[in-house]
Amino acid sequence: MASVSSTGSSTSTSFTSSALNSDWSALIEEVVAAKLSIADSIETRITKAETKVSAYQELQSLLSSMASAAYSLSAPSGYSDQSKDVFNSRTAYLSTNGTYTASNVLGVAVNDGTELGTYDIKVTQLATAHKVASNAQTSKTDDLGYNGVFSLGVDGGTAVNVTVTDTMSLTEIASAINTVSSQSGVKAAVLKVSDTDYKLVLTATDTGKDITATAVSGDDVLNGLGVTSGTGTFANVLQEAKDAILTVDGVQITRDSNEISDALEGVTFYLYATTPTDTSVTVEVSANLSSVADSIQSVVDTYNAYRDFVITQQATSAAGTAADSAVLFADGTLRSVNSDVMTALNTVIDEESMALLGLSFDATNHLVLDDSTLEDSLLSQLDKVKALLNFSFQASSDEFTVLRRGTMAPTSFTLDVEVDGSGAITSASVGGDSSLFTVSGTRIIGAKGTAYEGFTFVFIGDASESINVTLSYGLADRLYNAANGAANSSTGSIQTVIDNLNEKISDYESDVSDIEDRADALRDRLTARYARYQAEMAKAESTLAYLKAMLDAANSND
Image (cartoon, rainbow, N blue to C red; front, side, top):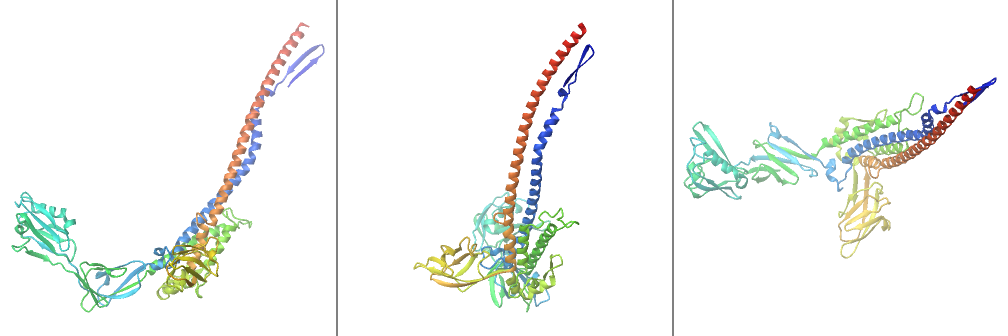
């Protein structure tokens, strides 16, 4: 602003101007900051929501690990993932009534799902490969001077021609034989007996098969080397071809290999040595108890990791409020999941509980495993262990089985299956309600939204039948369903919460973006407005300066 003052007969005018020196930018930013303060509070909400998402994702991962651990203990016979059922894992236990180590005589591999049993094995002869040699040659590198073709093969195989020229040495003939050994079934080697004694050795690549050799044209190379005699027979037989001979529970078996996979279904024998007279090896095909024990330990480990997380989320501060680390304190989803997990672990089947497995809770509800109790139960009560853990299925019809399973079907019901004259299934119902199922070929599929959702049954009968079905949801099965039902990345309850939070975060981010855009627009408007004010005030200052100059001139004339 400007001021004009006068004293006596003379007039003195003075002007002061602060307007031109005002910090318009600071004023503008102060107004804009007030508008952006709303965005700051929304940013705080975003941070809290993102922290919750991270916590839920950690919970999801922990439950997923628990579900995976429980799954191998829950899969029933006949289920589509039967290969993952740890109770189908097999191993062979070997013992002998001799003084030797059984595994030095016999090796055994067992396929998963093989029938359990015990077998008495005696090995009386190992299979051997036919092996013949040439006469002694003074050098392995000198040209031998033979020009001829001979064929090599084994009984039951394909003979292959080998061509020899006069510039080839013993080593080069062996190399020519080995070039076609994959077709002929015969391989060659040069054996150094001494500095002046080398022999060509031919060996059948398979045991129990005789080598065949025939001169085709030109020089009779093999006869010249002394491999064959004048009659065409082998002159120097190092080892006869022999079949393996063993007895299984007193029944003699002969094979041309020491690897025998077709004597017992799902069992492969590897013969290493013969059993001494009056001794045998006992082979017990059994469930792989180590795999079962490892899977139970895995359940314990994954549950305890989950329990650590839950305890963190329930922590309180000294003031009795939620601790900073308790992001999901009093969270309804976590509370529901925890209730389902604990209910599953407290499952009782035929009066047996997790105590049968050597499991118990400590003071903090962590699982504790007694290895001795578990080992005793696996050795003496395996069927009870399996019944406690597995989902089980029984039906009154041998032509009816379960392919996939759900989680809510009654533990017992009667399924009425109707079949037409061609043997095709026309309907399936429980209590006369056919809307509970849909039919696709031989498959009977539980309808969505019903208690039978998730179940797929297979019926291969050709006549209508009422089938009594009994189901049992074991501890591991229930634990898998509880953990997977929450953790599943597509349909799980936790994923639903995460999706909702991410949607809210996206909305918050959109709100912040809108506020920031409006604040930027406000800054632009204020900047333009104050620029106009600045221009007007500069003009006024110029006018005042002009008037002052005129007054000063008038005063000086007086």
